[in-house]
Length: 318
Ligand SMILES: [Zn+2]
Image (tube, rainbow, N blue to C red; front, side, top):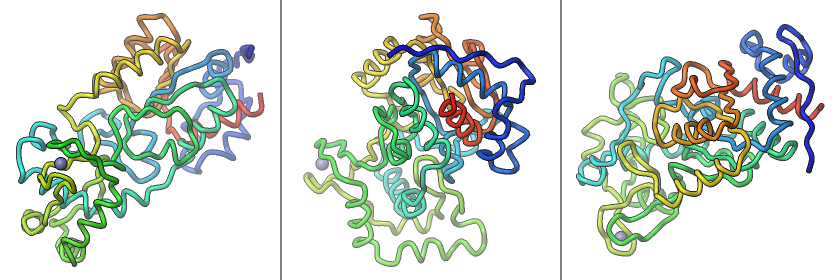
């Protein structure tokens, strides 16, 4: 397929502004610039970009980022070494995750996820490498999604390697812990026992007393208490074959589009470095500064959902 570059839009040109207004949620209008959307559309129509997404694309689905727009951590995430090294850490994780799962699993794809899927259908945009573990790209209809940091939908036993579905595990935890959610969340009244905010890896903050009574799940095959969500915790490593797959995708692409990532962790940033080293265009759409700003050939600092919705509209109209 031959794709011709669309004409460039001069700064200040208002082409597509009407589309933008229709697509953007009201308080975001002023922050999405038509010429940014035009430049992104030109890139998408002229190349076959690889897409790399981070937590920023899921915040509008109610799953917060670990980091705010200033790049600083809001919460301390579970550390890999702590999780694998301590039954108590796993009990704490599973107690929190059990309570948080209902809200996490109820999250729906937002306009940003839907726009990525639309862009894949409307342009030559290729695979999506996501740092998110929420499965929302796939649910929005995106194809060729590589979950760089794994998925919360599956659980793996660190002792015997057995795998289980997270929904099944949730049901087993419910059987083993009758009334736990009500007891844990009833402590919320004083405002200090349980966080109302869910974390990116699906857990919430619970009081130590609540955690202590939680019966953590054990492996259905070997009975060890070493079940781990199939995600890469901070301090853990992305499996080598997955990294190689992502480097291969980067090497086949002729542009890289980064959406909603501060690129603070090397696991995603290395693909930006690889793309920059190859000399292909790197476009970054993220609210707030990113570690890849020096490598970016196109940088859009704007809310993701409205920007991507406007972009998909622009590309559809091209
Ligand atoms: Zn096992």
